[in-house]
Length: 88
Image (cartoon, rainbow, N blue to C red; front, side):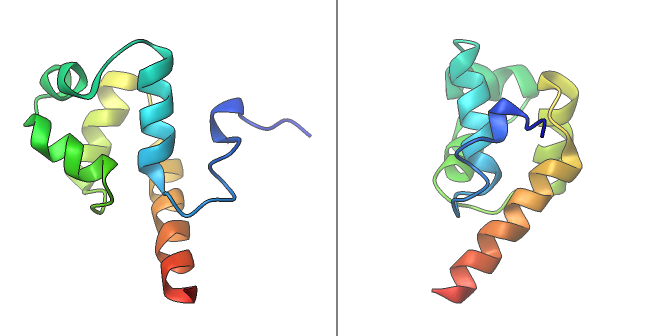
């Protein structure tokens, strides 16, 4: 079975897409402020996302364009997060 290593530890949690985005940025040595400026959003927008706000279509598109994230994967993780939140 071939599993994307970036997804390990994320699939079984309810942290959603923010967890995988944060991991990839950390791996590349990019802090959230630098990432926000690179994708053209206010640093507070990215901070809110990392702290649990829902992923917007616009932010997903920018993360995909600038850092190569798969939009479908990001929204699948967000759906899983919401499902886990409803269970609790």
